[in-house]
Image 1 (cartoon, rainbow, N blue to C red):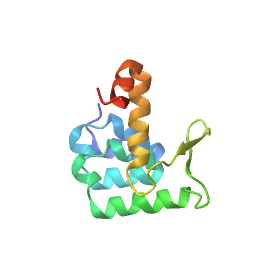
Image 2 (image 1 turned 90 degrees about the vertical axis):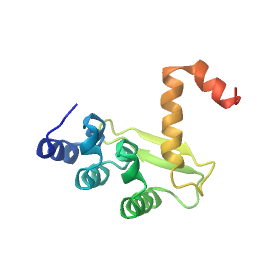
Image 3 (image 1 turned 120 degrees about the vertical axis):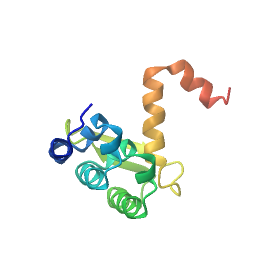
Image 4 (image 1 turned 180 degrees about the vertical axis):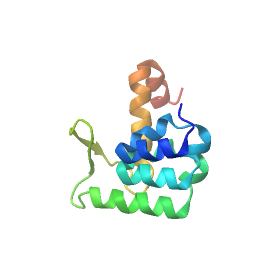
Length: 124
C-alpha cells in the first residue's frame, strides 16, 4: 500500500492501474484519480466511491468510453496498455455507463470462485 502522494502521482502517470495500490486517502484524491484514469480508463473502479460519483470524473470516463466504442458494434473494445492484448466485451446494457466496470468485476469474481459466480447468475 502506498501512502506518499507525490510517489503515487508518478506511479499512476506510468500506469493508471497502480491506483489499486494507493491507500484510501489517495484513492479519494481527485488529482491522483484523474491522472490514473487519463492513463488507463480501467483504473476508475479503484477510485473512492465518492469520486466514482463525481460529475466531472464520471463525465470524463463516459466520454473516453464513447471514444473506444464502435457505434456499429455491440462490443466495447479495450486494449490492455501493458500486454497490448485487445479485449472485446459484450455490451448487453449499453445504456448503463458503468456496465464495463461491472462486467470486469464479475469476470474477476469468476476467476476467483466459479462456484460463487454461478450462484450469482442463478440468483441463489
